[in-house]
Length: 131
Image (tube, rainbow, N blue to C red; front, side, top):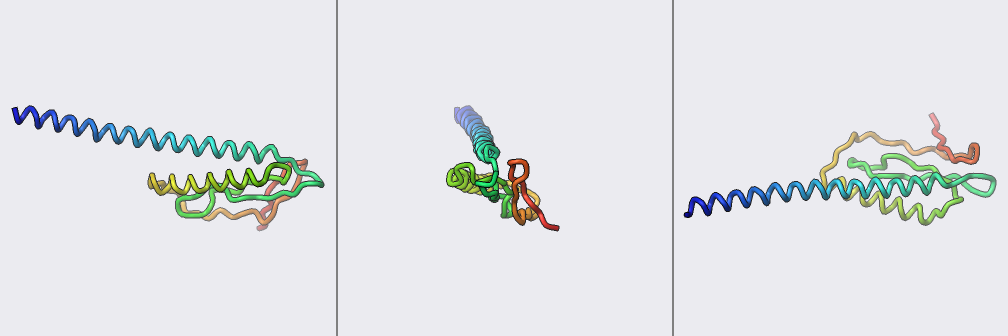
């Protein structure tokens, strides 16, 4: 009787352990998808911007590398709701930094240079890099 009880208890505990691992993988994937969706929202907003003589081109650091610093820089014009864009980017950067820590994400630790400036060409803001 004790042996049967211990066997059932062991099987039950093993099932629970493996179930927890599956749940954590689902949670990680869900959180990753939320990051992807938020980044798409940010990029869609930025691509709606148009530059002309009444607007200014700007750029903002986007993403959070596990080693520190952004993954890239997003160029946009002041023709969009800048406050909304900045808040979305801040939220994204914070969520990605927390995701990296929570799931022990690694990356290359290369530094991404920001543009030296941005300019308007054919009604589109583009980054300018100096050599």
